[in-house]
Image (cartoon, rainbow, N blue to C red):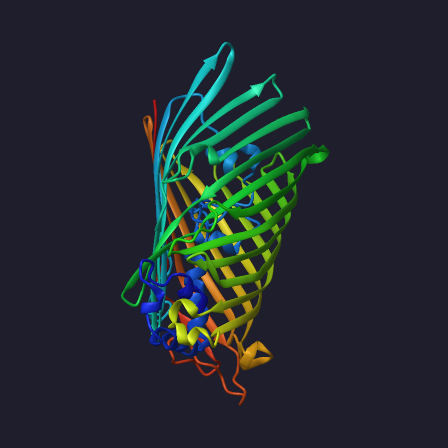
Length: 535
């Protein structure tokens, strides 16, 4: 929390004029953030809010199911595939052979103040318009799509002596072109923004992909792209408003294959590599500037077995790995150093699907996930202290480790009711066992050795969540309307026993005798909608 406040303190104010009280204020923030549950809930708000909203069009809770696919109405659908154009970048710009206009969006609050006992909240929103049309170049059809996208986040963290508000909005306009069935084996697709924000050239981002069928049983798919995420965030700390930019440049290469084998088997595999850097170089302007860097890799392998009777079985292994580092600057001088931030998420999923001749289906899946990460951060407080205090070099180093294992149980169904109406229903249950440890210290006099060393251990031992999903759609002539809903219907937080063998406290401060706090709260809501008109 000290690092975040340091990075986002009052842009436009001369740091020397802030005085020594801010340094004391920063240390009070750290002291009061020792409440493990408060710190954990505050971090949960930040994690949900600072996730790349511009890249995610599903539910916020999809972060907890890496082996599935986004589907708000069903709560996830692991049987979707990028090869079938119903998920991911390929599905987003697949287009149709007819003219079509679509308006959609979602609004969600995965973490509300009632869940965090008024200590934090996070909300996400997105609005989009898209128009697609198919034209012909000789005998070759070409599908074109134009899309306007405006995602945004709003969040807050409120501890005893500290309050942080943040808000972000990003608008972009993309154009995409798809050439399907070129020479009956090849499909090409390309997309890119024609407007991405101020000071960002449109050609600074784009993606190109191909899909090639070697044989009727073998498909190869790949895409390469790079994107600029300026994403200027506005913050309020106490009464001071400031802003900074994520300043993130990312490049990715994705390659996958699918093989159709005898006896109804399909085998798929994917690998994605990403690299991250900065959009703008650090300058000497008196503003807070971030300089991110790093790389990531994702791997996936699955086997699908489908019978003509409608039964399908799926097993999938997924692994995501991230390595990041970065710096924070004021006036061209570094005051924050992220030495490393490393994380690995690994998932194993089993799923079953049953399709009915009447048009409906039932999906059930179980996912076992493990995650681990570590981070080291050093913050210097000279932007918040007078010159005389700078000579003492006030700084603090933080070193943290965290891990979690969780199981997810999901069942979902969709069913048509006549020719016009259809509905979806799903239920997810999560059982999460987190662990975390944070160490911090400041250098001794003349920077030799360590002083004021402090160690904190996360007190939460288990988190249980229940999330209900539902959706309904209607076909009225050339118009199709759909509404989806996700709702957290159950939350249970358990603390570890204290050193004296007693039970920990619940999130409301009134724990049960077993150290649990059961919150049957109707919070964590997300609503999505879409309206499509086919000409």
